Length: 168
Image (cartoon, rainbow, N blue to C red; front, side):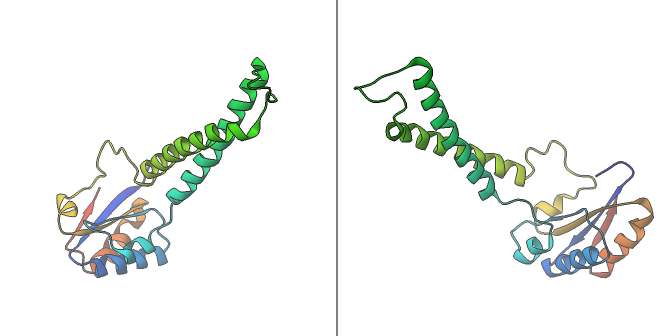
C-alpha cells in the first residue's frame, strides 16, 4: 500500500460472492487487490494478478548452478594447472558431475526463493484491517485505493454480499 492509500476489506461467507466482488473491482479499474481464503479456490486465484511462477525461479537457479559449477571447475583447473592422469587441464566430461551437483543445489535454492517471494513470506505484520475469521471459514477481498474511491469500493463489496466491510 502506497502513501495516501487506504484499505477496504470485505468479508464473505461464500467464495462465489468473493469472486464476483473481485471481478467487479477489477472491471472498475482497481488494481491493488488481495484475496484471503481458508482453502484454495481456483476461481479466486484466476481473478488475481499473476506473479511469476516458482518454476521460473527453479529454472534460473538451475541454469546459474550449471554455469557456475562449470566455471568453477574449469577456471580452477586452468589457474592451478591441475593435470590429472595426463588429461588436458580443462577436461569437460569430469566437470559435468560438479556442474550437475551445483545445478541441483542452486535449482533447489531458487525454488525456495520463489516460494518465499510468491507467498510474500515472512510477513511481519498482518495487513490492516484484519479479521481472524479469514483464517477460519470466511473469504476476504481487500482493495487498496485512494481516499476518494473508498466509498465506491465499499459499496461494490457490500453489493456482492459482504457480511462486513472494514476500512483502514
